[in-house]
Image (cartoon, rainbow, N blue to C red):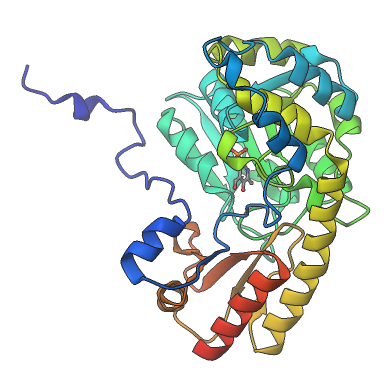
Length: 365
Ligand SMILES: Cc1ncc(COP(=O)(O)O)c(C=O)c1O
């Protein structure tokens, strides 16, 4: 009778390290007091939110007492138009993390295993383990998912494979060909969650074709987010695309009203803000190239990235550089949590933010 409730927490929680978000600007000012702070720690959009989304927010205060549309119909219609899928194939989440969590809650438990790369986005492991599932990590090949070897790690109880493409924190991507080759080797009794949070930043022509994958596979769930290119991370909106049948199973797990009214309206405006999307892509493309070059020219070893961030190492102690940069008002992310203790990840900011980062890291070396 004296057993604490804590002893009954789901298997896997005991040795689970919680997700560590980027340090908030206010915290850094309170702890170190820098005069200026540039946050390049959470892969946010340096141009801010879509101006169209901001405009819409000003008009919404009259309806705050009403529950949001639990089915997010208008938002699904806008996404359906963009992705060329029927709204019965779309599930809306409180960030794409919630879609990942819903999939895990629907298919993972004490008797299952989930497969993912080592150094994959941390949330996959956290969510899988918290559902009681075993986690199997596949070694990476040159910091990319080694999709060709995933089949060798499957076991009978594997229920989900998680693939972020591009991957966070490595920034590497896999081509449509590589991805489809893996799909052909995976039984249809395994759900493949393909996380495309950084989809819009990818410039390689052989990248993923969403339509083709949805048409060919019933065991795929593709996730996307409004937190990156659309710049509304604070509002928490993401979505999943899959077969109609899978979507109705996932919708059983989803809480009613999981995405609030303001977030739905802002996402609808943001999806149509082509000007902001284009400007954000262009800025990221030119600055990613410039920062990559500048880092390499001061001796840094950068992993080639197709995302809105660069992960790199140098002849330094990454934890020490992280703290010293923070004291100077530059927040980046140390990668020890991803088992990459020598590495730092910086988000591509505006030109001015990136210069501030480059000047400071240059002075510290
Ligand atoms: C690969 C990847 N997937 C998903 C997410 C979560 O995005 P959201 O804000 O939509 O929950 C992130 C956030 O950084 C990410 O890097």
